[in-house]
Amino acid sequence: MTNPVIKNAGYILVHTPDMILHNGTTATVEKASNPNSEYISHLSESFRRYEEVVNYAPNQVFIGNQKPETLIDLEMPWHTQKVSGERYGRFGEIMPQEEFIAMIKMADAFDLVRLTDDFTAMVKEKLSESSYFTESEIELLKEGDSKDVIIDILNDHHGEGIFHKGTLVGCVKRAHDLDTNLNAHVMLENLVVKASGVLAVKHLMRQTEVAPEAIEYVIECSEEACGDMNQRGGGNFAKSIAEAMNFVNATGSDTRGFCAGPTHALINAAALVKSGVYKNVVVVGGGATAKLGMNGKDHVKKGMPILEDCLGGFAVLVSEDDGISPVINTNLIGRHTVGTGSSPQAVITSLITQPLDKGGLKITDVDKYSVEMQNPDITKPAGAGDVPESNYKMIAALGVKRGELEKSQLMDFVKTHGMPGFAPTQGHIPSGVPYIGFAVDAIKAGTLNRVMIVGKGSLFLARMTNQFDGVSFVIEANSGISACAEDSGYDEKEVKKLIAEAMRKLAESLTE
Amino acid sequence: MSRYTGKKIVIIGDRDGIPGPAIQECLKPLDCEVIFSSTECFV
Image 1 (cartoon, chains in turn red, brown):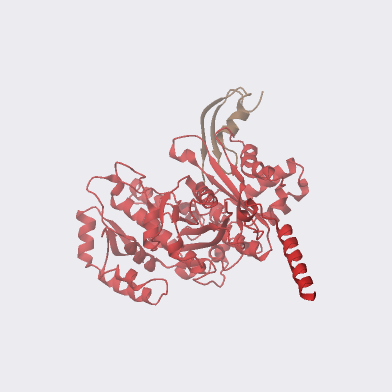
Image 2 (cartoon, rainbow over the protein chains, first blue to last red; image 1 turned 30 degrees about the vertical axis):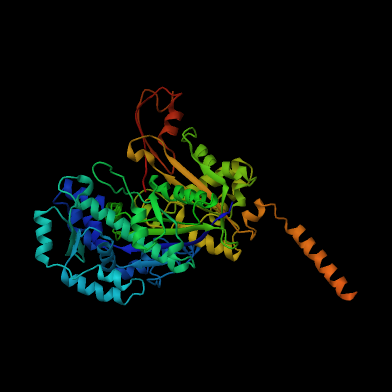
């Protein structure tokens, strides 16, 4: 058996201010319950400009231009601290809204998305300048429709509007007359997942030497469901993303687990690679329009801009052992089981110390923990506190209880084994996975040896169970010796000895 | 007698803090009635 390794990770943000108003649940619920809402009528005044979103420190960390630790010394609130940011980063990019609207059209396989001719012409020109889109992808935009056609679809055919800078620039048609799972709202939500997933995979593949043809399986792990009225979550985003990426030798499936979905998906990917079923598996999660502006009311109440103005996306490539890339240690998997219980101590034990105990490791043997990495600049003003810090404190407290660190070292542990949150509150996006790109780089560089990824999910939100969920895994430095060699009884010392003996004999024969 | 004696209790737990069932468990020995318990996700 081979060891599963993580070769690369891609991370993207998409600035989508108009979707806060038209697609985020906080705004749409407010509009439905209070049509004359003061909040809605002034909401757009609290939107940030694209440049502000690029120059926002946590966003620069998310795409890999700054390390998470740089946020430690940055005074909060971070949204008042303008940094010098770039659109493109080590792991991905921050895409502006107009280009992403074009990507929604590209992601549409059933001619449901219609964009105005003016907008189409404008965005085609912008995309032509980018090296990330092929001519055949840009051709998918076609020529566009007149605004009258768009308005007709909205008024008479239950379409969902697409807006840019407050102006109607297109719409999504419903995909069925009566099927609520194929109505225009759901179709837009799902096309956004697909398009943002494609963007994340594009940035993943840009970083790797693995050819698109070598990808054998894709696992999509966002929190939406695509299907029709007979199979609401029938699927599957994964294969649609594989098709868009021209992964001709891949199939795929969707894995769900609320915010824990990505960590479940990565463990599944590791198992598929370790067992030899597939050599290269891409795990991808697209973004959620519903969560845009989720805590907006609290932000506006405090005179802040709406900070939940970006969709997030990520993609990770799990491959067979290359002798270099960090390894997912499948012996150290943590899981919250049905019988675990819900006390914080039970939860942390199941996710953190039980897997470590299997490897004879202490809490302090893990250099960095990547937990719920929500940006506290977003959550603290909304009353949800500093979520990563709470998680780190609980891990440290268990370490104190186990006698692995002193109580006085608790906050020091939070600082050295943790990091400030930097990910958008997009549910599955901040859960464990945001640090994988940094972990791969740091482990390869030798500055870190072991990182634990922890994903948690609020299953009770689906009202099927009161259970919470969580899983974890450990990424370690690659020893350079493949598991295949270990399994086959390969003994490096023995081989060296045999070679030395052969060389000695050769030397003796030459001198005779 | 505790501050909870004879009281009806509504519990709203936090997934990343103390979940509802854990709080409920702590209240069991006390003379009070839990009329609602839920865990919420605030992120």
